[in-house]
Image 1: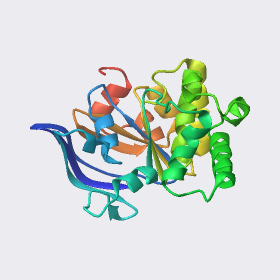
Image 2 (image 1 turned 90 degrees about the horizontal axis):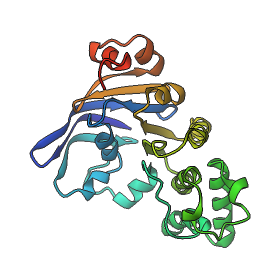
Image 3 (image 1 turned 120 degrees about the vertical axis):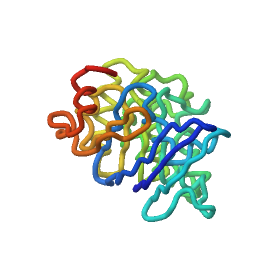
Image 4 (image 1 turned 30 degrees about the horizontal axis):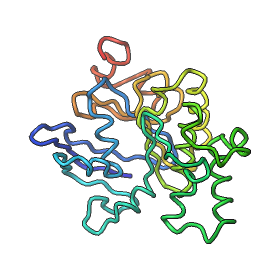
Length: 248
């Protein structure tokens, strides 16, 4: 994905100011910064989730494979299949584990019949590291799983429609350390199959899971580069101050 001069407004208030970034397909990219700096708002522009907020408007261009995702010809439903989203709080559908995964492939016509659906469900749950834990209870409700399992179910649901990009908005903030470690292992395993962008309030997590990091502050992207450089040799003074804990 590539963004050029992206600004986001909520009514008259500018939440994001002139952000341009190239997001590589082969790496995990982390967005870091203090609360309220705009990182989640910017993430939501990448699959047009801000369309659901009446006062929101987006200026600039965002391209997926060279195509402007805000063009009038863009099918937003198809866009959100290509750019999946995993939210801060796990949000499985109030359906069975099987139906949670099968729902997307069904509505997007990705399965010819039950055999195809069974294969997609099994493959997606395996990729999300959940298959062995739920294979004998696929008819149970997705909401009956633990918080960490629910989040992995939501990741399985996102990858079931074979997206190009997966957006993760603080996916571990509601989880305990053991569940967080499993999600981080999963991100590492999915790295290379999809472009993954993760918003995280944890600098340690960004350092562990990402290869590229963008630092946001007061609606601007202050610095973007290799994660190792951002954390050990930042160019901007504001980045250095945030990394060293002087504010945030």
